[in-house]
Amino acid sequence: MSTITDASVGGKRMVLGIYAAIVALAAVFGAMVGLVLPAKENAPETAGFGPFVFEINPLNFAVYGAVNIAVVLGVLLLLMWAVSNRYPDA
Image (cartoon, helix red, strand yellow):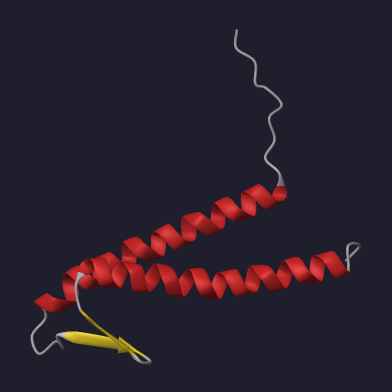
């Protein structure tokens, strides 16, 4: 009979794992949008974000989605980390 070991995952490790999964999912969704968008009629050939202009293709949109989500969630996670260090009992 097999037994389940008492291996637990720490909270920080779990949060980082979920963060990585969300960023990867954003890359997949970005690639799907980059695959579908050029097939539409009257769709633009380039897209831009601030000073950056790039061609619409799956790779560019995957990187775009992953970087945007990573930055936004990264800032929120850093704020959460800073607050939890300052107020450990909260």
